[in-house]
Length: 61
Image (cartoon, rainbow, N blue to C red; front, side):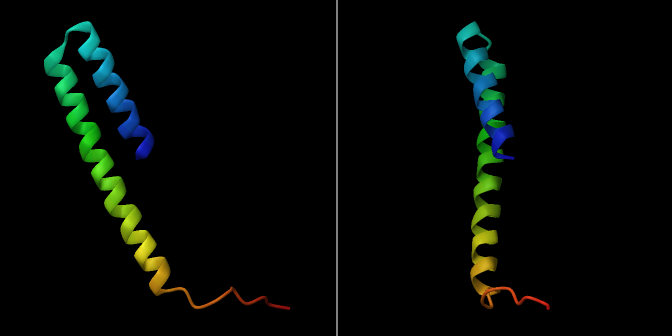
């Protein structure tokens, strides 16, 4: 997801340099949404890993 957000930002910057401001704005907006979703999911994953952490995994022998 982070890779897709960076890709949309790059596409938006290239479109802006070429003069396609409408397409650039749309691409950058999609990139911002994807970055926001990525950050929310990363924080949720971090919190869940802190809550469910029960120590090191047990080895079966």
